[in-house]
Image 1: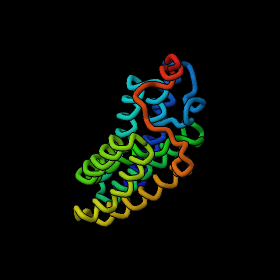
Image 2: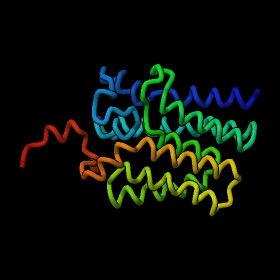
Image 3: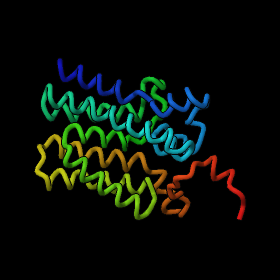
Length: 206
């Protein structure tokens, strides 16, 4: 009973579309109609800059972290990973957007792992950051960080629910980046720029 309540709470927390809400409240527009059409921090950052992207990133991490940590403390590691997975599912298909397409779960996945296996999350974060700084492809950094999760969980001797969760999360992240993989193969994937799309469009031609 308790685990079921915690999982439901995790899904509802994950369903909070902070990127959509923030842009709608402050700009009066639907972020899903801009950039990549994603509600996550990456698209918000690309479109409106760090002032909007950074808070969305933190909130998306928090909505994975809170349910996973609470469930781990109250009902054990298995409940923690299920609640974290539910938060990821909520971010992907949020009930508050009538189950329409949400985000790609990367930040929420990171938050969930900080709740159930902080050392694994921190190490995967280093992998993500190093890849991102080297290549400046957010998609490649996300997939590389994701594939490192099960490896790190095994190396750090985490409980089996964490290892299984890491493997499933890696698969989910790859599946949600199918479009990015196609664009990488075609050479059309855009590198991340800290200049917003608006500023790039307003920059003088050279």
